Image 1: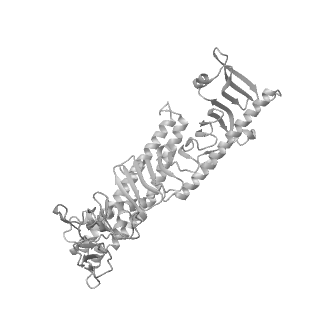
Image 2: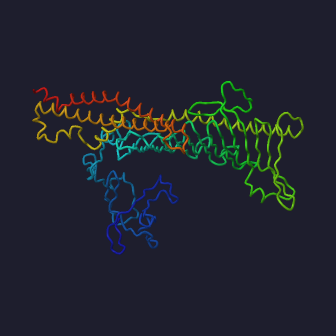
Image 3: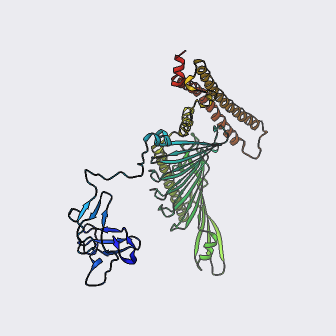
Length: 523
C-alpha cells in the first residue's frame, strides 16, 4: 500500500479479506491490520469523500501471500475506493506466477536430517551413553518412561557403583518421578507426583532392614501421612487431621517361630527382603496430640486422654489422662486389665484394644497391597535391565565412539602412511596389536576385581577376629561384608565368562574388516 502521509512512500501491511474470519464488523468489507500498533482500518474509508479519512493508506499496488503475488491492473489503482479485493478477478488483479511460470524456490536451503544422524545421537532404540570420570550418564529419547540416569562409581574403571539417580518423565503410568539407589547400602528412595491414585509421595527402603512410606496430606481417610517399619521390631505411624486427635502410633512386634503359637488378632504380615513374614504385636503406644497444646486447650472441668499404652501380651492398658480442676492441670495414669476380669472397665479396655488392633491390621493390609502393586508396576514400566552385562557396556562404549565419528582401528593406524598400500604383514600386525590391547584391558579389570575381592575378604577376617570396629554391631558388619564379597565373586565370574565372548567378537570384527581382509587376500 502506498501512503501520502508525510511522503513515506510504499509500505507493506496486512490485508484481511472478507468472510470466514469471525470479525465483529461487517464481514463483507476488507480491512487493513497494522501489526505495529494493533489497529484495524477499513479499506473503503481510505478515500472517503464524505469526511476525513480514518485510514492512512491511499492505494493498493500489489498483494502477495505464501502462494503468489498479484498486481493492481485496474484504472483505479491510485485509490482504494471503490476497489474490490477479489483475487479471482484477473481484470483487476493480475497474478505474477502461474503454471508456466511457477514460484521460484526459496533462497534458504531446505533442512534435511537423515534417520542415520538421529540414530547416531540416540542409538539403540533412543538410548545414548556418555562416560565421565567415575560416572556415566544415560540419556533416553522418545520413551514414555525414563529420561535420564546418572551412575556414580567408586573407581575409575566404573565397576563398583556408589549411587544411581534416575529421573522419569511425567508420562510414566505409576507416576514415579525420581529414584535414588545406593547399591553398597542396599538402600532405595523413590518420589512420586501428586497425581498418584493412592496419594503416595515418597518410598524409602533399606533391603531387609526398614522401609518408610509417605503420603500426601488429606489423601487417606484414616489420616495416615507416614509409616516407618523396622522389619521384625517396630512400626511407627504418623497421622494428621483425625477426628479423635491421634497423631502417632508405635507398634512393637516380634518375629514368630514356626513352633510358636500366638493370638490370631495380634498376627501381622510384613515385607522383608522382598518376601512376606508373620510377626506378632507385643505392645502398642498411641499419642493423642501435643502435650503443650492439650494443656493450653483443655477447658475447666474437662478430662482428655493424652496417651495409651497397650501391653498386649501382659493383658493391660496404661492410660495417661489430663484433668483441669480450675486451678491446675492434673496428669494421672490408670491401669486397666483387658483379660481375666469381668467388670465394665475391663470390657471397655478390651474393646479399645480390639479397635486399635483392627486399625493396625487394616493399615498393614493396605501397605501390603501397595507394596505388591508397586512391584508389579515397576516390572511393567521397566524399559531396561538394571544390571547390564559386560557385552552391553562394551556396546555402549562403541556407541559413544561412533557418536564422535572415531574409528576403532585409529590408534593402530597412526604409523600407517597410506591405508590403500597396506601390506598383508602390516595388516596382521595391526590385528595382533588390537587383540593384545583388548586382552590387556580385560586382564587389568580382572586384576582390579580380584584385588577388591581380596580386600573384602581381609576385612571380613579382621572383623571375625575382633580387630574391627568395636562400635558397630559385629553381626551386621559380617552380613554387609559377606554381601560385598558375594557381589565381587559374581562380578569376577561374569567377567571371566564374558571376556572370551568379547575377545571372539573383536576377532570376528577384525577378520570382517574390509581394510584388513582385502590386503590379507593379496598375500
